[in-house]
Amino acid sequence: MNTYLSISDQKNNEVVRLLTIFSAFFLPLTFIAGVYGMNFRFMPELNWKWGYFFSIGFMLLVVLVIYLWFRRKRIL
Image (cartoon, rainbow, N blue to C red; front, side, top):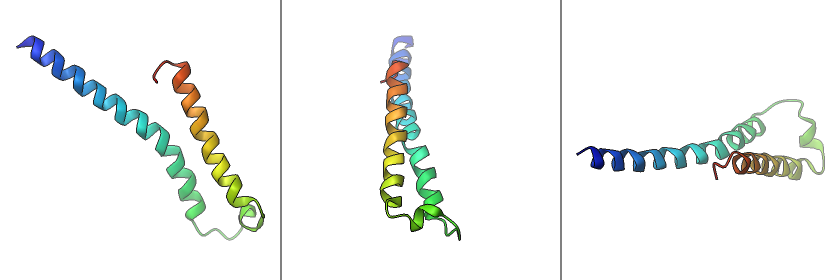
């Protein structure tokens, strides 16, 4: 019985770990997209020619930093 519970807990821990990793990647991206989705009156990036590419590049940079941090901590 204890062996079964231990194996079940291990599988549950792996699932929770995977969900945590996915949420760590998508939470900052959702925040950035949410900020750009608001209708502010003065957002200099909206009038800038490269504003769209800047925001996409910033999102990719955030994902890269999170990925490298996870690799350094040996989470991935």
